Length: 328
Image (tube, rainbow, N blue to C red; front, side, top):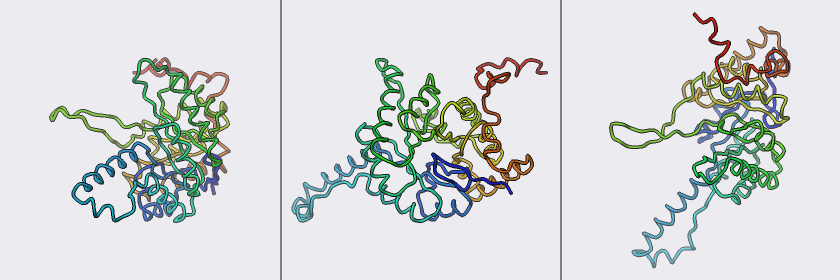
């Protein structure tokens, strides 16, 4: 029987399927169902500093609305303050205690100081590791790409100094030199890289002439982007490479391991097929491994990643070339 054990940012997992950060981790019952379905680990829904700031502003606004009419009543109670990240921290700790599979935290901050502060507080919940979500859109013509990269690496260094648990960086694909950025982030203390984050995409309703945010499920074809870059990064960095986006089947997991991935994150397929689909994916992966006589994941990890020689450019090309030649 195939051995599916692997690691996620160095943390041992029973298998390579990790539930990515999403609303499926909002309830203990849901988290337990995911564990029972066979998930190797789970990343709890992200702690967003921006959301906390908005909630605190709303809290202060509502409190201010009460004071003119109920000033005497308000003064009878201790000074009320917004709890900040306390509710999220409590939830992460409860999730960790509810299951045996490894639980990881996720963090997305705005200010440089808060990254380290919140990271330290999340470490205190007992999670096995921390995932940092970096997204810095270059919308100011005065800010160079190198400035953005230096800022993110500086933040990573600050978080690394603040915590002892493993750190994964969840990246978007829009870096000019992704391999260079990943290499520098590894030096700065990253233990793993999650490729790639699906970003929120604004959309336009042409009937109502309004803007709205578009949230859609990934499609299997989207897995080709992380597949290419994991293949290019394999053997160039020592950090774990984690694939995400468009992974719907056990064979998709096999593809990612073949190019060098240590594990994968799944989200969209679980919204469509429910938690039980994890067991199906694991069965497909194990069946494929038995068919090809691979005893464990290490037996074929990186087997089809970029190598020196005749296929050195197979993952680096940006045009069709051979793919279209001779097509009927």
